[in-house]
Amino acid sequence: MALVEADIALSRPKESQDEGADSQSYHIVLSSTSLPKRLIASSPYTDEAHLLDLDRLELPSRALALALQSMEATSESYATTPYLEAFNWPAVFQRVQQETLNESTAAEKNLWDWSFYVVVFRSIISPTVDRDLMFLLDKESHREASESGGLLKYWYGSPNAESRNLATCLWRSAEDAREGGKGPLHRMARAEAKNFYKTITFETWKLDVKRAGEEWSLEKIS
Picture 1 (tube, rainbow, N blue to C red):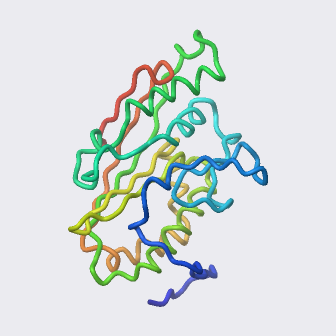
Picture 2 (tube, rainbow, N blue to C red):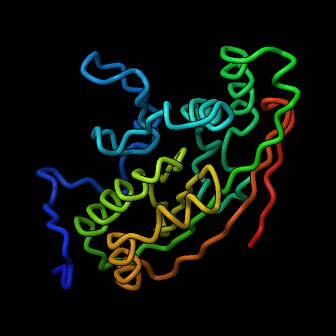
Picture 3 (cartoon, rainbow, N blue to C red):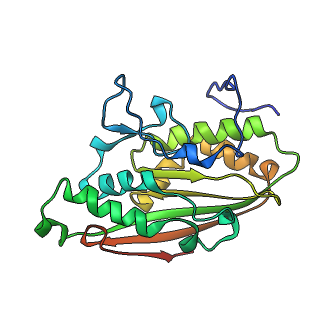
């Protein structure tokens, strides 16, 4: 499947990966001495261009990004599980509290009242999908989105026996999400969606975090 009308040169990886990769490998904090400590892997992609620079974030976003390193699906049925039940949110927000205490006083954390923007993708993958192309566009779209600096977490799992899957992005704000998703690679990926998926649905959620993670809520917006 050829890419047309593109002004960006793309090359396939030497060993193409697909969405069947082990999701446990997604939760990685890179500790290589060749990389600055401020850079973390916040997605399945660990090339330096895909890493999140914590120094670009204010404390609440930085604490959440670090806490999301421990984000995991609660069961193998996450693709069809309600979003609030699909992940280990209580453990994530316990870590938010820990990360916050590393950088702020108890009095300062009481002032926190922060909101984040969440996108949820549920899909059924087409049996005729070009997996190499799907992986390539997903990876390069993530790199493009990462340039905005506001994508705190991108997670996707493995399709189940019915080819159903779930992916999710947690952004610093809706404005960051709009900025990160308006580039040419995202346009190419959206154009190919009809070839990648039998069906795909999008949901948006609002994540409110108060008292440095002691109080939090996830509310569906659309």
